[in-house]
Length: 109
Length: 115
Image (cartoon, rainbow over the protein chains, first blue to last red):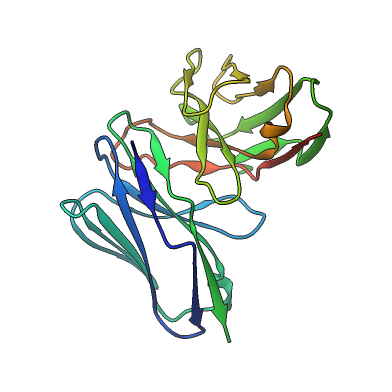
């Protein structure tokens, strides 16, 4: 079966750095996405990785290792507005997205 | 640009009744999707459409039907609602299904409660 694993919840301090991990087992791989979802709102696109390595976009970076079936989202200089759920999704061999349950990130002052 | 709109925002529905959730996008995207999101679970694909005139079944299609008469609209119909269909429903669209950088953009969601 297909599976995406993420921690259910994480807590971090304002101004700090946090790493949210995602491991996957899917039938085929055609890219990995990270989305942010604030409570009661729609998911919004953050990043996309299809090759191994680090993609940096401002305070957010995303890393991929295809051989390990592993990705992480790194958030730097945390702000209170970063409190949200972070969703990992893998595009499988049928080009459909398989979604993890999401990681709820709580930022404390 | 409105992007993707969904209606209604929320609805309480009696079991056994039918309902259509509406989704409209103004980005001229080829592909559209319907997901449901339940607590503790990832988004699950109900149905999708890669282009106007075609539809396909996702992971959890039973009890739902869709149509894609034109590029902009992708309604989801529950023919006879059951309590297990209580969920938040998101419509999404993407420019080119399967394209290298194909990114899905989501509507604001419809919160449906079936009693």
